[in-house]
Image (cartoon, rainbow, N blue to C red; front, side, top):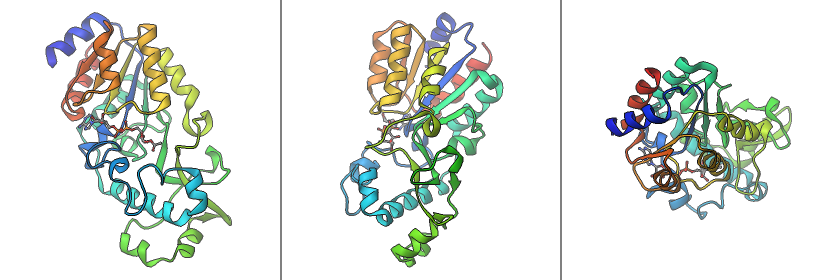
Length: 272
Ligand code: OAD
């Protein structure tokens, strides 16, 4: 891996200044958080009662807010127990080195990038953050950290009405700050245009641990592929972005885990 990576960086990125990293659930897999589409994934096994993806819609939430909240609070507790791994730490070090020339676009709602040390301003959480809520019509100025317990027994002891009451702010019911399947990306809450803008100006785009199933990441990688922006896909399994990288001279696919590759890549990029 080292030789291939170094050869790619030497020939395509010797003057690389602006870096964009795009991460998915795979980067947090080594921290113990299930992915979405893997064997134990959230969308594969679903919840106790509901089929995969049924839970994550506004339409479902508007009909049974307490059940959907309970599912997100359960996932939030898993995220709280997890710790950033060496791949997260490598990205925090890269931001420290590249400052405003570094942008992290993450699909992950687990907050591990921020806990590893990446800054809120340079981390575009394009699917939200499971630790935040907002009133139904709230914008980014109304985001608020969730203060509920992460202890499942405490949550289970609360009735649905008590739970929803505790999740109100100024008398208004709130929802998880997460993008749902029947909703669209936007700039204010999810940094849609900003993500495309930084990609268009990037000298290198690195994609880590995503299956490529969502719209904005697809637009970003298509842009890199079509505009000749060097891009690297890091994923132990075959995926659409790795296949695109294999087809193009300015693409590189590394079929290894994020934790094995990112510390090496970060070191190589900081010594260019
Ligand atoms: P997926 O579960 O679809 O894909 C996870 C990817 O991570 C797969 O391609 C795995 O091969 C890869 N992977 C697993 N272990 C890895 C490791 N150690 N290192 C690197 N890669 C690894 O998750 P996402 O692509 O993130 O959206 O899913 C994208 C979005 O779909 C999610 O953000 C979620 C979901 O619907 C919302 O909830 C809005």
